[in-house]
Amino acid sequence: MLRVIQRTRGLTYCRYKHSKSGNKQVDDTPKKIPCLVKEEDMVNDWIGPSDPVSNLRPIKFHVSKEDSPLAKSYRSQRQETQDWNQEFWSEHNTEFYEMKENFVKKRLEEKQEEGSDSETLSAEEMSVFYKKFLDNHYKLHMNYNREWYGRNFSLLWPAFKLNMEKFTKRFRK
Image (cartoon, rainbow, N blue to C red; front, top):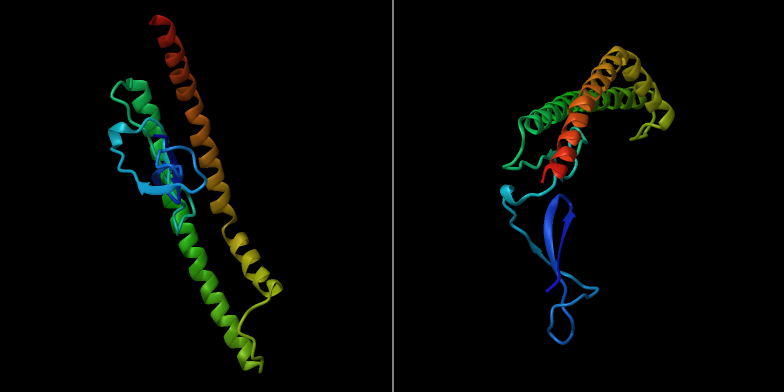
């Protein structure tokens, strides 16, 4: 039996491939059966489907029983950075869509008062909103970028130390 684990739309599936003779072999039409994988059986980080509000793909970090304090600390820092990103982009995108909806409503009402029967706004009309939104949020975006670069840069040293720890462990065995 050939068992292939793959990620599809955020879920993990086991694909069993069958031949015409009934033996389980490679075939072009796999049968999909959902896998129930326990967290302790995870061997890698898992990446989920994008969040509908933040548009970020959440990561489920692999936790090993043999993790060193350095590995736990590094994973914790990565999780904190992911949570911070999730919170920022959820709030930002919620505000963006609310402001966009209000702009579109207001502009369509203005167009109807002018006698237009249009139900949509052109790209040129929407560009006014996009420019205004970006101009109003310029400092917020700059602060986010500085913080994001700082957080990612601060992960480099722990990642380097962790990789060196793993490298030296191989030679001790």
